[in-house]
Image 1 (cartoon, protein in one colour):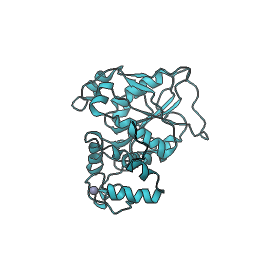
Image 2 (spheres, helix red, strand yellow):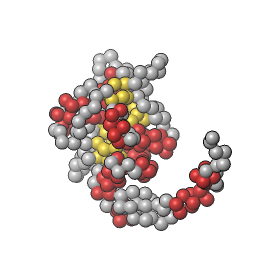
Image 3 (tube, protein in one colour):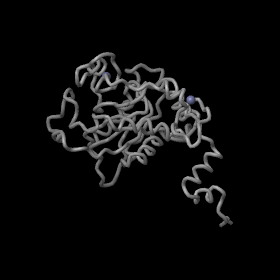
Image 4 (spheres, protein in one colour):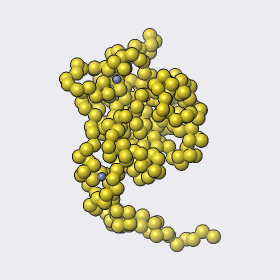
Length: 276
Ligand SMILES: [Zn+2]
Ligand SMILES: [Zn+2]
């Protein structure tokens, strides 16, 4: 028979918030998300000062599509040679931070070390992308060719109602990893920002690890691997923020965006914690 006596954890949850926080800090002292050094309690930051100092923000002078940084003053709307050569199904990919040093370590600990609590510090880094002006700019960038019968781009005064959509994992990979890092990040970002989060995609094929493959091989490996989730009577939202942990070649994001655009989405911006 189930006990009616509240567990210690339940009793702790009922405490006033500052007291609860202090009790939790005593049990689980706050630690740096990367090097695990103990932080002063209550922690004012997610990384220790030494790690924080070497986090690398993505420079303001970067490609408008893939956020690849380029030194020097770039013309407005600059597109890098890599993006000029190809058409992505998403409008652009935004990361505020480079995947290097302590941030790469924190992502690695979260994803492969199963330190699920790191979703909060990492979602805070993802939150930084929401202030990017490309989220409030009208329509797709000028170089993207619209379909002839596509609806017109929204007027500059309109701020789109963005929906957060995580990149899905194949059920087999989900069993192996036990959680979908993109879904955890998207749900935490949803709590931080108030933007709704919906699981609109499913992965239909179990694909081999992408890391060792070239861009061309990645695209071939992923072709048709994502499908929209069937939702009775609910159309696919028109403005989607596709959420993932790291942006590298853009192949996964391209395949996800292809499936979402085929299903009716009009604008898709990829937001990642970091850029590889
Ligand atoms: Zn540290
Ligand atoms: Zn680019």
